[in-house]
Image 1 (cartoon, chains in turn brown, blue):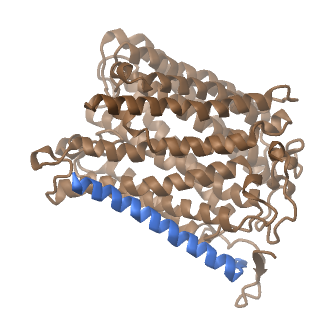
Image 2: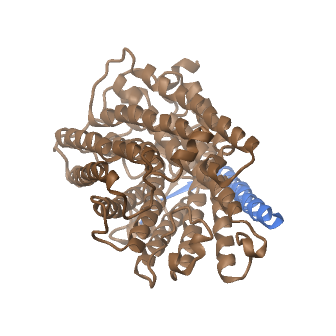
Image 3: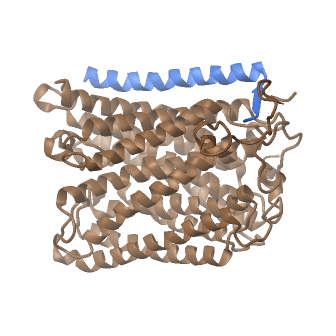
Length: 545
Length: 40
């Protein structure tokens, strides 16, 4: 029996099945597609805000010496760039994709808790605006790094008046994320089309289900950590204050118990999108569907038991260092399963290289490089050399930019035609890809050399021996930043009509064999799956049957 | 005006129950983190 019944509101006989008119539509909407659009547009805006901060950082580091900004503001930029990109851009972008795609992919009419869905978006906006407002406060925005380590972050010089605002902002962002996660889990568990079993779900849905559990487990821990910072600062507690019997290292343990799963919160949906796009352009079912699901679960489990590899240098017992070293290395196994599966999916496929596929291939190659440097850092004795250097900056940017960001771009190119009914300009898309893929390497690869040579992270000035690679890195950064304007242009152009070519319902050849959304009309109607589909595509799960 | 999509009660109750269980899990993680810090 259908889980939903479309019903006219009896008080409104003039019901037209469509959205409310004007601006109000976007404020009060409970429609998963509207909320998905809001999330995606907000994330895109924040991507450019966070990106502008990165441009300030790269401009300052173009040459040794202090050029443009004072050191405190530079530190604010590194801190805010990270917070805005993590909590304002990457996470909301994936929640936006989840909002759009999960109901379409599982045959649900909407998200399970639509009003909460609206609330979680607007709480995100409030949280990010509150965080951004600290830029204009006396003493400036927080500048102790995104990890907000005490005792540094509790010093008046480091936070000015911003700390309580930043902490409250984190609370809002955390509540918003938890509500989003609850919604996703409830939708996947309770709203699937009756024909769709768990092991029939597209990988994107699977990865988001597991990510949502990660969010629910770790966001409250982060909220606890920053609340204790707040009470240490204003209510004379000594959780992290050695003078009062507390321990600043305790904060690092609590923070990274959140922080490491947080890394996977940003990468698991990335894996899900890649696993959705690659089979379509390889014209083959995904290789190893079941192993992909189990690998995602294994990575999520391991993410909870490796946190202290971020703090090898704090002085742990040897047994602790060894445990965290080996546990961290173990993550390479399920991650390797995934990389081999993507490669095997492409193997002997009738591949074509449209923009979404190009971004996916670049992701597989460049993410693997980021993964390998992760393995290097997992070796505890060697990490003493890498710790807090630009090698770390290079590593995590390789896992976030050519991985998460590239896959978000791929998702945009892949689904925009479905959402809007218009085709994007492939030539400009390819230009965007090549400029991004080349410049991202000019930007981040030299940072490995800088880190190995000993350049510390989070500094506005550096020794002259680091000058050449910094200049090259900055040039790459400026090209990468500028080329993202092409993506902005393409998004606006596609929404307005794109190439003028009317796309088919499938958009991509045989896409409807892979996932349910391609069986719907293009553009996707405002309400979909009011009656769940009787059958679900099984192309992507062939190897499990 | 917006069309309302009314869930049947069984699905609606299941959604609310799922939300309540997940909120309880989230709260327990918060409490464990703070309790761990207090006991140090």
